[in-house]
Length: 218
Image (cartoon, rainbow, N blue to C red; front, side, top):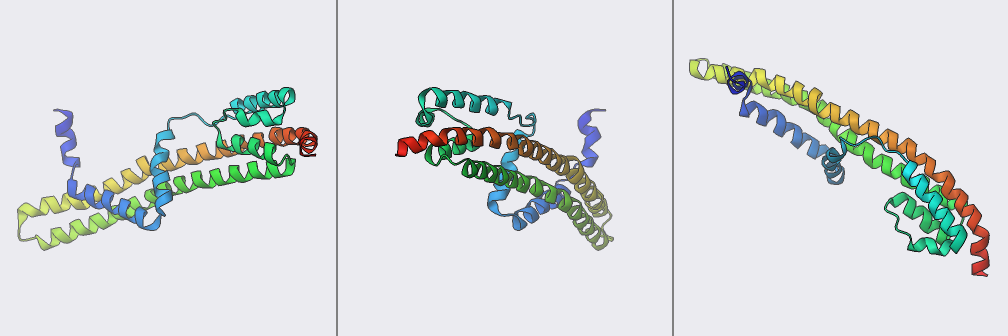
């Protein structure tokens, strides 16, 4: 017996269309397009390790040495790929106020976390909707079965839709969408906590360079 023949009884395109299509439609109707696109894009990071700020802290330390030797203005020429660190360094060069820099970094950290949380909640919503769509498919299959009682050849197909729709809803919700949502939440929480380590060294750099910026302005 081949794998295809074994799985064949569990494959029904009608039931899959009802559950899968219904879940996608319901999620699309209740989710802003921006969050929906982020949720889809977030699936590309599922295999990544939790965020570690050590590399960014090392870069901030290197930028601090550059600033100490050549002046804070030289930091504008540095290549900084991380958006939060780049915004913090730009604020140091332009403003030089430690409180402003710390507030800016904290705002960026919170905004990033909210974006990540919205993506995770989209998948969590799909996990809740899928079983409900499975029940909808079951009801549709039962209605088809009862209306085809005089046609014995149609009863089996209708019953298959009824049973498999419930199965698909449970599988999609519990084995696909919910694990994705949980993984995204863990990654978002880890990054949120790690990025909290960036505020102190950036604020310290701003505090150190503030007198120099005053001299330059004078």
